[in-house]
Length: 421
Ligand SMILES: Cc1ncc(COP(=O)(O)O)c(C=O)c1O
View 1 (tube, rainbow, N blue to C red):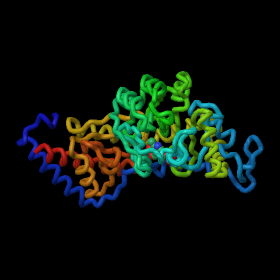
View 2: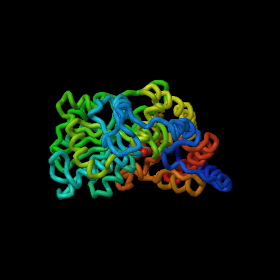
View 3: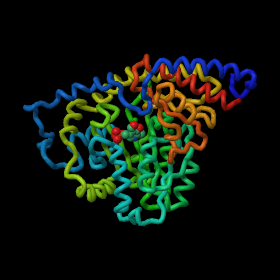
View 4: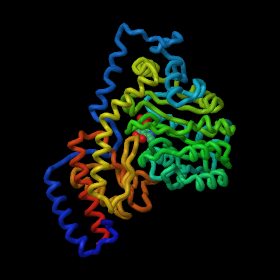
């Protein structure tokens, strides 16, 4: 039954039962962290053969003869550009292979715009105000980048097809202080939303008031499917080219959730004009990224099919965990919570009754399970409804996840019942 249809007399005894369960649960002394989307040990094992690619007598030259042990090739080795270019369906001259983190590439892109502007525009640090649009709920680290640079963030509601495009179009075209928008277009973090073709087309056809407005297209989960059916989104750069607006796109991805988080390869894709602009400044920042890691990744995957085979292995390990989350929430919290079963990505985004998220997170902490902080999925850590909680189920083994979910459901019920009373 829906909680809102229940009387106080019906709810009160249920609250007592959950409180007793909570006390019993606490005595178990559980200690679990479900706060971040990271690989389980089993997933890390999948990539161990990459360690065997190199040994002291291995060939260290890339296909064009570059010795990858040395400086050189600022924008990456050719075979890495080809592989990751194919992954994102962009040309080899539209891509830069970065270091171990796409987040660092995003941070650098904003930082560069602050100090140098973009392709001749006024450096953002000289402007009285700079704003970014932030589809919510979203990725806390995107918001952190804005916060650290003093960029004002504006919440944009998400729908099942992506951000509210009426609002995006209106704001972007009328306010030249709006310089960017954060998007995770395939399996958004945390909702797992897949941007529809119409949404991508509307992004490609935006008419921003600011000439240096950029869409920060974080394609972090581009091959991270949880089902055999593989969702696909339209290629934003290609769509933008059709409209002659390709300079508006900054795309990012990495192998963090493919090989080793924090020890993979990142990529930046954009128009040729953007790539040359970035290169012209990047050359003062770094002589070259880690080409050995680029070479190692290409030799390990061999080609895009190899990379996709690796993702099937991940799926086999993590899909049962997502199924467990979704089944448990459906059975236990029907009528109390709202969530969508994700078909990819790394999270399940749960909306508990308004005003209850902080309480749920603190009860879980008290019971031994650390969740992502309430509010973390919103700019400035402020969820206006105190409702969204991001569950990251990949790390714990199934048995522990099951226990953590049991606690989560108890916590949601306690918080919701108390609120209703
Ligand atoms: C949407 C999104 N972008 C970027 C990252 C971080 O990627 P990287 O390890 O390449 O910095 C994450 C990690 O969880 C993420 O969820």
